[in-house]
Image (cartoon, rainbow, N blue to C red; front, side, top):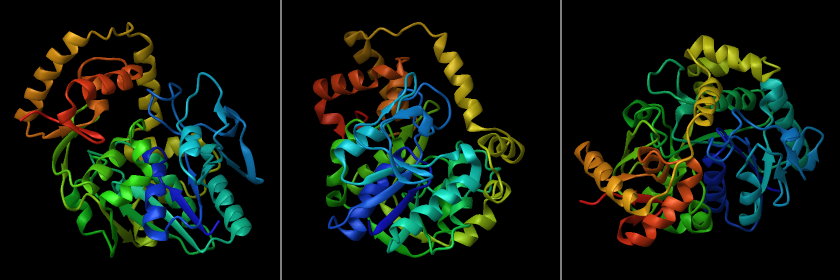
Length: 362
C-alpha cells in the first residue's frame, strides 16, 4: 500500500477518496482509505458512528485498525455502506474508531504509518467544513471533521490536507472558503468519475454526488437535504485544493478543544459547548421522530403529481437541480424508499436524470 487517504467526515468522503486516488496516483497501486462507518439514518438507523464491535467479519490491519472487507456485515439494527464499497472498489477501507476520542484515532494513524510506510498521506474533506471555526450558522456536521483534523495534526508524519468541491456540502459558503484555499491540486473531470460511477448509482452522499456532477459538467443550483439548502454548481465545484494543516487547526476551535479526548462522549461535550450542539444529538432526536412516523405508501401517480408541484416550487426558488434524498423527504416518503423512488423517476423521466442528480423541468 503506497498511499493512505483519510476520509475526514466518512460517508461520501470515502467515495471521493477513491476517486482522488485514481486521479492523482493512477490505479497501479491500492490505497488504504481510513474512514468512519457513519451513514445517514436511511442507511444506518442507529445514531452516531459505528465501531468495530458493530460488525462481523472485520480483518486486523494493525492492533488498533480493522479493515472492512466485502464479506463484513454490520450487526442489526446497524447499517453501513462500507462492505458494499469494499465489494465494488479495489481499495482497502479501514475503520476510524472515534469511541476512544482523538487519542485513539491518533494511535490508529501512527500504527498505519508504521506498518505500511506510505509514500503519501492525504486528509480529504469534501465541501470544506473542516475549515469551520465552529460558530457558523450554516454549519451542520463539524464533529467528525474536527476529530480527524485534530488526530492528523498529532501524527509524526507529513500529512496533506485537501478540500474537494468547496462549498458543495452546503455548510460554508464558497465565498467564505475561497480565501482559505491554497494551491489547486486537481480539477476532476468526467473521466475521473468513471471508476466510481457505479457507486454513485446507490450511495446516498449528496456532497460527493454534486462533486461528481460538476466534474461531468453540470452547472446551476442544487437543492439538498431536508431543509432544501441551495448549493451553487460552478466551475469551482470539481476542484481540489491544498490547505495548510496547521492553519486549519488554528481556525477550527472544536478540533483544538478535542485534541486530548479519550472518549466520544468527551468530544460530544466539547461540540455542545463550542458549536451549541452535537450532530449525534440531532440524529438521536430524528431517529426517535422517525420511529413514530407511519410507514409511507408509494403511490406512483401521486408521486408524479407531487413531484411536479415540488419542481415548480424549487424552480421558483432558483434551483435547477436537486438530490434524490431531497426529493424523497420533500414528498414525505420514507428514506428506505429512496431507491424505489429513484428508479421510478429515472424510468419515467430519463431526460431529467443528470447523474447522480435530478434536473428540474424548465
